[in-house]
Length: 418
Image 1 (cartoon, rainbow, N blue to C red):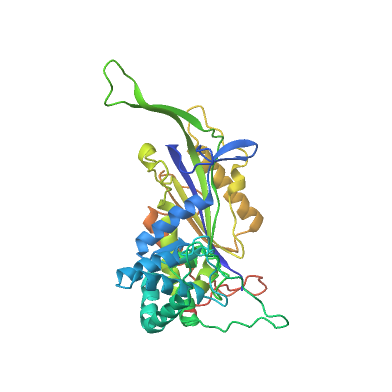
Image 2 (cartoon, one colour):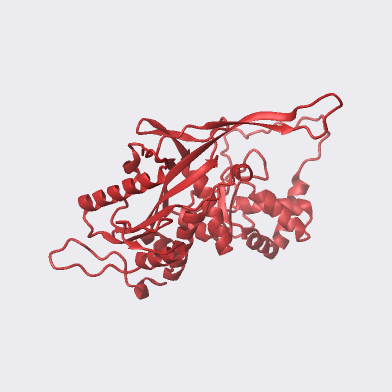
């Protein structure tokens, strides 16, 4: 079955800011159309997007290698002895998947980064509590087997009997693997949206449904230096000057931001039509309003997107980034936003001419300007746009006309609900 896509095209004007830094501490840039542009990486904006969605949904996820460490602390907080808590946390990692989660350089960390619901510790602690008796006995036996040698005594050399095969170690897992796996592969809304790579546990990998492009300026934008000083408030007698001086860099830019949500895959990930609708609305709002927080206190880049344009498209998504491969030129009076809007509108019309509109299910926009634009339905504000594009994204495609190549893409809502 072909997919349906919700595309978001945003023009966002930013004054002096540094939302994303490179390895030298300067604003990230990229070269496109043979000119240097300001850039905010997709990873940077995706981080802000994820946390915005979680704050609005009150459903949090965490990326970590420190699951054994955090579970140990959680069990100690529940009254477990520290040694037993550490043993139980290590056993959770050992019982996950077919081979367990390999430890990292720190024994209380995993080699694999996990992406989990933040409340997983509660479920894992309850599982450990259910099997506490078995864990306690195994921890005692393990302690009794540990040889007590003098500090300077080398351990005895292991001898392998000649002519005998090495014995196969029996599976001595103390926790039910199915229960551990179920907790570690549980999902949140952001996991269903952004995906997860977890090959160590069957069913742990989740295909992402969001494609997010790096944001870039529609015009040439070089980093600009900002030399600053911090005045010494307690100067010694006869001295004056600053306690610190340095040069920071920032950029000013009108950014083109693009994201695409695969509605069909999201519905498949959630298995629930209403949940998929809620996540679509949350994603749309978060992508419009989220903002990376780097240098926030010294630049306050709290601007709103000037133009938000959506399209609901079947079969394949379309980015308008090539519209800005020739850098936008400002008129004599200055400003890149107005010519950027004209450029985007012209490119949208060109894609309609090339592709036709049979696969474009709906489109619309909202803007800080009052004028009408050839971008579909005009919406008064973000709330109206979010509600309308979410509803349109889940409206079934009508049956094809006789002789048409169009096919219905989404089942009726009643058939899709689980």
